[in-house]
Image (cartoon, rainbow, N blue to C red; front, side, top):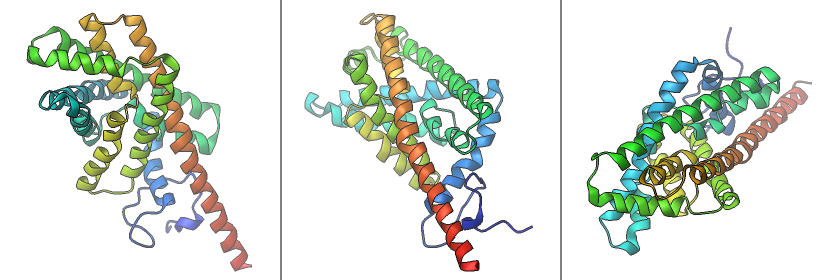
Length: 287
């Protein structure tokens, strides 16, 4: 049986799309199908697989913190925020290109099946994925931050720079951290959507840099990189575990709101509306 053309497919249809049906770029519907082609598989992955992948991701994402501190240590204090922002995408490049699991990327992928089906079974599966990924990510950042703070893994001269950066990142009150987290969640979920628009490695690396550097530049709060910094402060003794846990919770809530509301729901609505309009137009033409 021949696959149905794009305008006749059900809005929840998956199937990876490599070339656009028309024009030179994938349509929103074709990007949606690329995301959906992985979504159901993601929901069904074994718990051990998700935990191991997310733990590796939590370890690797720490290089955004470490790389930013190192870049900042090379320049005059006035240029440190810009240098740190330029190096901030490093951990994201490691995680995304290795196909490890990051909680904030998954405020889009497993959400789309729920938006299409709207049933309790899919909701439970999505929450299961979120819980496992968040647990694995935080375990990885906890270990990475301990290695940086409590062992001679890095030069001692770099530790004060890391601590100053962590202090600044985690200093905001709960609600302001949550608000800043919305923008970080928006950017990361948008990155996931845009990565599904191209199979070119160079383009994907450029997208990763373009959408993650602003998180550091504008001081948005990313829950997983931020947890590395929060745990670093706790291990170094400059803050209590309770206050750092509150920072992480606020950032997680903000990231989830930003990813789900500003990317998943909006792009889902765009695709579903377009496909309904095309279906109605074709039906009218046939009549």
